[in-house]
Amino acid sequence: MIYEYKALSSTAKSVRGIVEADNMENAIQMIRKKGIFPTKINAREKFSKSHFIKDRFKLYSFVPKTTKEKAMFSIICFQIIVIVALLV
Image 1 (cartoon, rainbow, N blue to C red):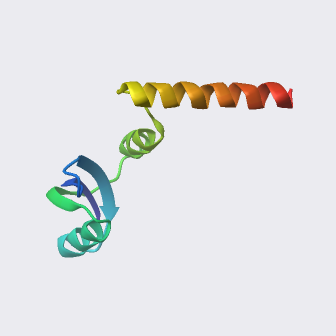
Image 2 (spheres, one colour):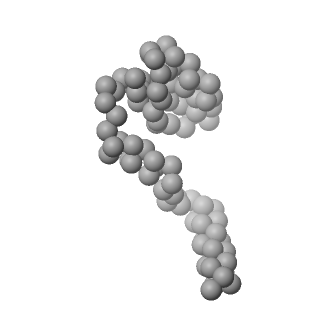
């Protein structure tokens, strides 16, 4: 069965995700093994493709919020441009 959860990290940051487990107790154990503390768990009978895509997109999406993140993002983008230019 698939379980969707909300949890708190050790730094009190809100985390969301999914786990596949036989029962609720195993799901809780798997979440705790990740070093996070579950606050809400819902069983999902079916795992839809749209949820899978949405969950995966969260992993690969990044929107810089702080000035430091924006600066790092700019540097990384510049480095990628330079590498691509050298390969062409």
